[in-house]
Image (tube, rainbow, N blue to C red; front, side):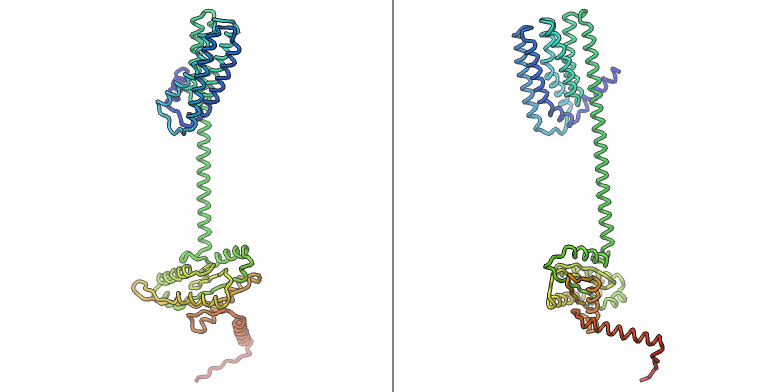
Length: 422
């Protein structure tokens, strides 16, 4: 048991952490103030029952010492302790012994030389200050043991010198009390260390959980990005376009009275894809996507909605002439030649333009309008921009109605086709 306590004491002398020293520095001013108060109480209780000059000298020395300790502790609290050397640990132990010196001086100065009331007061103060110091300094057991051992050894020596045979029960009690304080100090120190270890484990687990949540959030955002974007061009796909449009419509203000759409179809893309291969086609698509992003002149969203089809949704209220002018500038930028693996590739674009009031907005309708305008642009020879109008829709509807009637007439046998050579 004694060996175990000795080994633990040696361990605490070597293993002192910065936060333990900081804890003692934080509590030292309060400890100095409490010691001053106890000294004044003892002086008031013992005055008149023992030598007044000795008592006054002891009080003056005690006040000076604890005032100095309190001032030093207040100054030390402003510094941040980052590491504790072996020398610093020894200095803290010596500091605790100095802290105990006034109480260690009480037994030889006042026990057995005055009234019995003083003797009782000396024993009570010695025991109380020993326990209080053990509690205040338990974060550094070597300092705590040095503190209360200084007081109790002084008590034991005084008992033995004055009257060992008359005071041997008090000597045994003092020894037992000292052993008890050692055990309690080491137990409190181990408990504090275990609590800190548990807190460190909890903080580590919390940090790991935070990192895991951050990683899950990153993976979720990455998966959402993949789901809403075209992997080749990094533009929004059709689903991403719908998501952004829905979010935009929720926050649209009165200043945004209309939205507009460009439906872009690449000219001569199929020839490049068929003759140069899919790698050349992918290069063209990436080039077009970059041109659309870099050429953005207004607040808009670009998306790839098909093989060689792109859509631009704009949120700036523009009139018809401004829209057509912007679309024609895009046609000019997309109508270009570039070199791919030593061969010249030529690509162009046709654009269908549509716009619609925001209070009557229908995403599918505006894209259908832009598609009708695109169809008309291709009919007129490609490489141009056409603005949607109701007459274009009426023409498409008439053509579709005629096609449906012809198909129905063929199915019913109402039309008899004949081959007539020219």
